[in-house]
Length: 626
Image (cartoon, rainbow, N blue to C red; front, top):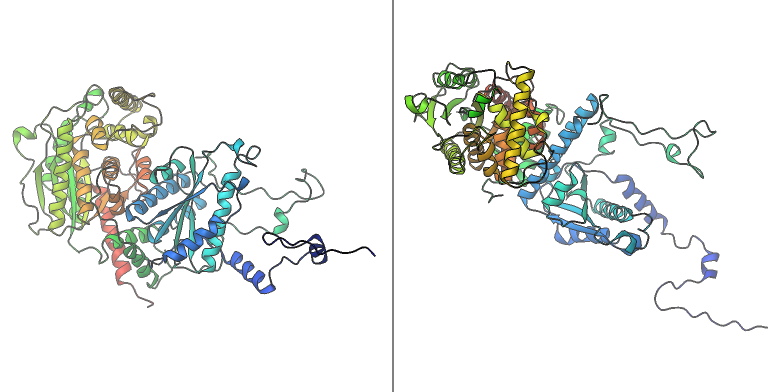
């Protein structure tokens, strides 16, 4: 009889033999209870959008990230990189970028899907105590990684598997995770200063969930439903059309039928607990959460920066007025003298803006930011009465440029000295108003030809083409539209040449320059003052309600100077100006009103301020369930 010798068993690695594995093929399985627990965790995984402010213990955070790090990776390359983000300012900037991308994508969807996407809650970026940007380091050539020479994107798939590991582990511990990919990838990379060759898979919100959804969120909202397994399971090959097996249903397209679509920060970022507290208050009102739609979002934003709400008589409308030499190039249907006429009527309390402010319970301040002729006649009205206590207060204050103004096409709009001085004057004014108890600052403007100025600045700031931004304007025609477009194209070309920047002036790329430099080259007195007003109001803790295109461009300048300002901004209206939607998209703001107005003067901002106060009253005074 042949001798049987004992099998050498390694002290490390796999200790089983082929006979062991053949005698019990399922011997590697976990016990029934553990398999059931795994199935339960997978079934209960949810994309969480609302979070409590309570911190995540550091040891627990590292545990879930360690689980992510144990994911399979092509060629054992481990290409994932995890950027932990806790800084409130970075979260605010990320939320603004996501809102901008959400609004941009919604524009190309069918109407019902557009509304659902705009209702999607992205406050988790601000609420969650931890943000995690998952990046894929692709700097190693694909051919140098086993398995990527043929499937070059397998490293990105590896990072996705890493996210799933993290997600399931977090769910098992009761943590919530929200995966937000509503970003332009390059914007998110720049936010975390990722080097070239690195790509991102989005932003993960991690924290204790403030919701416990029984089903996936988009399924509950009727966006889609989980397909039966048999509809996605194929045998051997993709079935041919008309074959015995019906092919899987094509994914639903939600595109619209028309086609596819700085400096040192001084403003205070809203505390995470205040953002969550605004949601908490909405949840105890006797009404379904989100029942006021966009107004609920606006109220949440107000209460995040002003937890006690707004004072009954703390609102002010700041109107800045200025003339522009570019008007001489035939870009407006109105004579430049109209600026002074409207400004004088405003100072007298008789213009549309003045009357709208009074009817909305706002006091008013008029700023002469360079109205032609007013330097000879003195100020546009009685000045210096800021803070007198009158609800119909009017004050006319000078904040005029000292140096000659240019027409944009041939010379800079403002000197660098004037641009800086006007911004500082606006900031100083807003800070005084905040010190005197003004907690809501609406902004408006008066200035013949300032839509041309605003379009030029918007193009430089956003990279949108002039034809995407230049509209007809009040009472103009197609010939004047062409004149406006030509003026903007030439102005941008001049600035690019002056900065030695490559590319055509009409190309879709932003001009890489400091905000104040762009303001001096392409702006105007009232835009400079209002940019300062927005900065000062936000830094003073006041809510800022924007009006039309020019005020929104001023706000975009302010955000580029101080990103935390975005937490204090609300879009009062969507004007008729073609480029207004582009600028609001860049700001990540949805307008409270869309009445096709083109009057300027802060009329839309005043009406929206009144609506906002009513919405706050509804939130704070309605019946409670707890």
